[in-house]
Length: 472
Image 1 (cartoon, rainbow, N blue to C red):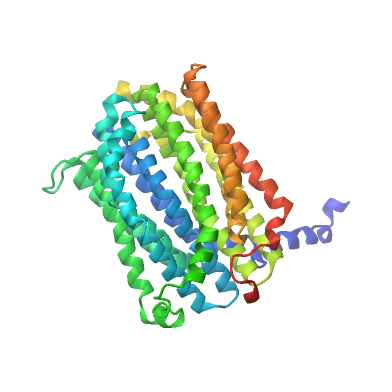
Image 2: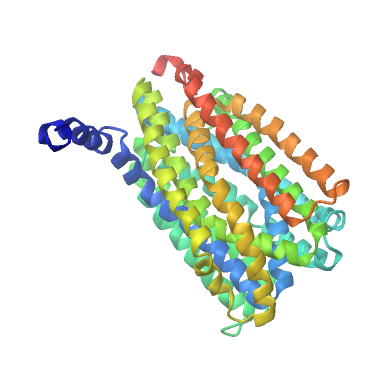
């Protein structure tokens, strides 16, 4: 019989081995992504521990941290989207073997990021007004304080995103892992002493958590800057030579970086506005939503690292003129993402308490039990949508790696408008509660994931690039 014939299984075994070993296969994607996954997992750990420590401090600080943190990220996500797109330029120039262009685009990107810093500081006087119009009145003061302090670290976040692209775009992901993990340790150590007032520091609560975040972001800028300015990098990549205002490169960076930044801004802004609208559901609803998203970060945030790896490999192969390998890298990354998020979805459904028990310490048992019961239900929503979140991150990063950013911006705008309109109608006219809002979030993520999958399958990205055509 065929099933007993060893020779019959050889082609299948060889196919599996090829899928693992071939260029841009699962092994190469995984090896490039693992340091980035560890790096972004450190962000996830930071967010998780921040929220946990604030919950230990008080339920109000936990509830205030989510909308204020989201509004802060909304403010910086456009420049971060522009800064992060330097990764695609670096990857395509790397594939085209143009090291001097890498230094040039990095320096232009850093200069562009510096121009945003005054705008972040100008947002501080508006903070109280923004929360007064949307939030539970009991949380406005805490939200305003948290947002105000975070604004001082906004410039560091954007500059770090630009500088890290110098390494991720060339596949030097271990450096990013080391810097980001070190930044995480800085943040966690300062959290402990500043929130609760240990080691002689004043007890600062939510303000202390914000200052810890600010310090960790500027730490990354210093660390990346020190490595970039090492002699080999200065000379080989022309870092010093690129220290001039190059209008042609700046225009190219703005041309492609702007749609990328707008896509990130539109999606995050829509999500933040939706959360602020949900704030009228009360403190407990925001606390459990914050807790559920904090736990969701274990599934979501590592995929950001995988997405950067996919974007880098796609950009590299586009830069070298090899689109079939770019497709291979994307599908290899998709396989990794689906396996990981599928496993996390099962854990959310079957044993949600392993993610919740760390929050129990320091809380009143009755209060924790109330939060726990509702959060378990919300984790079922997370389990339902996390597969589509994986599709979203995989294929949007593949499309960005090729330069298909205008389509991404248009789709993000359209879907975000529909989401906000549905949320506003539901909350104001249809008496939506917490679970109805989470159904909308699930539908939103499903739509994004499916849309970007079909765009990738359509294949227009294969004819795109962001670098000068004559270099490919």
